[in-house]
Image 1 (tube, rainbow, N blue to C red):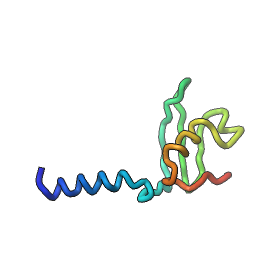
Image 2 (image 1 turned 90 degrees about the horizontal axis):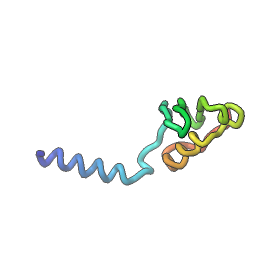
Image 3 (image 1 turned 60 degrees about the vertical axis):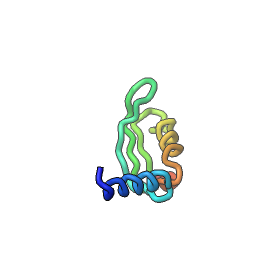
Image 4 (image 1 turned 45 degrees about the vertical axis):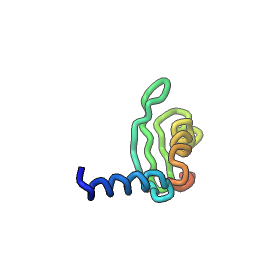
Length: 80
């Protein structure tokens, strides 16, 4: 590996350790839950999940897990 690439890898590692550098605006994913797979999306502070609990409560275990995982990298959830 050349020295330029080694420097970039080291810089990437430093960036990855500093969570405050990242801010997600939107994403879309499949969440493998205990009972089934769920579709979860996030767009400018608003989560959406296709599970029944989310439909009635606007929050669920899937979205809360992502809030914990992405702490400081997303804005707090906004009620739709």
